[in-house]
Structures are given as C-alpha cells and as structure tokens.
Length: 397
Ligand code: BEZ
Image (tube, rainbow, N blue to C red; front, side, top):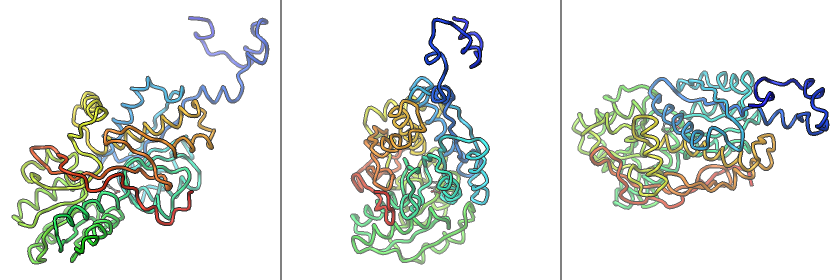
C-alpha cells in the first residue's frame, strides 16, 4: 500500500508534494473530486404496513444488481439511504423533501403506492432529481404530468388491467364487476379493465370499493351473487390481497375471480388453496423460461431466502436502468443530457423478457395471462405483446 492510500491527503499537501508531478496532474479538479464521492441513491419505499414485503423485495433486487456490478455503477460507489414511506400519502411530500433537500440524493428510487408517488412527483418535478419508479402505477405520472427526470420500470396501472379486460373478452365474457381499494391504483386499473373488456363488447356493470388499506370486505362480497356477472375483476395487493382472496373463497362465491396479477403476486404461499385456478394478467410469471429469469430467481432466492416476484423484477430493472445511465456517462451523473439520452434509449434484458421505454418514459413490455397452479403463477398465454401505455397528454418528444 502506498502512503497516498494509507491516509487522506489534503489538497494543500498535494500542492506541496512531489516535485516530479506537475500541478495540473497532481491537483484534483472539482470534477475529479465529485467523481470520488459516492452517488447518493434514496430508496423511498414501504418497509411497514400492507405493502412492506413489496418494498423489501424491490430493495433486495436493487442490492443484487449493485453486488453483481461489483459495488459500483459507472465506476462510482453508491451510498444507499432508505426511508420507510409506510404507504402514507399524507407524509409523502415531507418524506421526499427529506431525501431531496436534507440528504441531497442524486437519484430517488420510489415508490410502491400510487398516492405516495404523487407526493414524490411534486417534489422531484420541482427539484429535477432523477427518479425511477419501481412499482407505483398511477397513469398520470407518465401521461399528462410526465417529466424529463422521471422514468418507470414497473407499469402503468392501465397496462395489466387493460390486458386482463382483453383476456376476458377473448373468453366471451360480457358482464363483469370490479372490486378494489378506492385510490388512484384501483381506479386507474378499473378504467383499464373496463376499456379492455369493452373492446369485445363486454361491460363492467358494477364497481365496489373500500378505502385503502381497509380489509372489511364482507359487505362488498355479500353483493356479488346478486350482480348476475360472469367474472369479478379485483385489484388488491400484498397483505390485503391475501385476505381478500381467502375471504372470497370462504364466502363460496361461484363467479370466477380475476384481475391484474397483483392479486396473486408474492402471496400464493399465504393464500393457499383459496388462490388455486385464479387467472390474472401481468408483465411477469414465475416460470418464464428465459436465461435471465432463471439466473435472477436463483440469485434472488439466495439473497432474500424467498422466491422472486414481480416487485423484485421491477426493482432489479430500476437498478439495471440506473446502471445503463451511469455507465453511459462514466459515472458523471451531472452530465444530464447524455444521462437522459441513455436512459430513454435503454433496451434491457429483464427477467420478464425484453423491455424498452415509451416516449413518456414508461416501460414497454408483454402482458402475460397466468393461472395460479400449485403455488405458482404459471404463464398460460399472452394478453398483449410489447404493450406501451398511450402516454396521453405527455409532451416529451
Ligand atoms: C399502486 O399503488 O400503484 C400499486 C400498489 C401495489 C401494487 C400495484 C400497484
């Protein structure tokens, strides 16, 4: 080890140092000093509450990419700062502000809950902080309120719900009901489900809702047998989805349950027999047979001690996207023009299959039809290939 490596050397000491070095080569430039600092990455995710496991899986997968890249992206070390947003929209602007203003993160990766995302969005569209959304699907973030510094590796709420509506249409379902938590995710997905179903002349005849994160499902379930529908579409996720699917089965309702895949994603172990046979639509399935997925699932299991799910995939791709950006600018994150150019053009080999980004900076991917079978969401077909969100109202060219 050299003397330089053993203890920090001040700028003044360097100036006074070896006569053999010219001042120009010995004095670190401000650019070199900035490069030596780690890139600060804020993870604003739920680590408690009904979406806690979703936030954890996203985090494990981000850490996996960083480890696979030897701890550096584009030659820069990373400093990770984690913040539990508790899926509470009312605290979101303040929490995002803490990361952006107090901790001065270079990148914000967050979050899961669409309502919390709106708080983040307000803060980062003002500050211009690079933001990668690893789950929350609120359509507006990559539609009318799209922003140059905001990218999404997960989905818009519309994408899987529209896919589910299309898949029901193919089965000639004409009348369906929609049941959900009453907030942006449930409402955006309800609109997508309806649009997909209407494509083949079907309709949603009733919407049933309860506030997030309540789980008092019984009064809503009691209404279903009287609705005279052929299918019930539902959006619930995490702990709420576990309880909903179990209560639906226990109520003995004969109408088939379906929905965007969050209903059975990462939850099959806890749902047990109640989930068997449920068909859903999502941009991921457990058994997707591509080499990236096989390697990813193995590595995730070794790290997390449990199986990967769509949330882990989305976190993995958020970090893969960041790596592409930082590699393109050789770690110089301040080089925004080239950073954003690389992010917008990114083509990623994801465990879900190949992905790219639409002009509104939302992910483009396949939507698979899956069937819950013996504890796995088995892919049984494709609802929509390379589905891009319409990006309505987004002015990014
Ligand atoms: C959302 O709030 O956008 C969301 C939460 C969990 C799963 C899917 C979407």
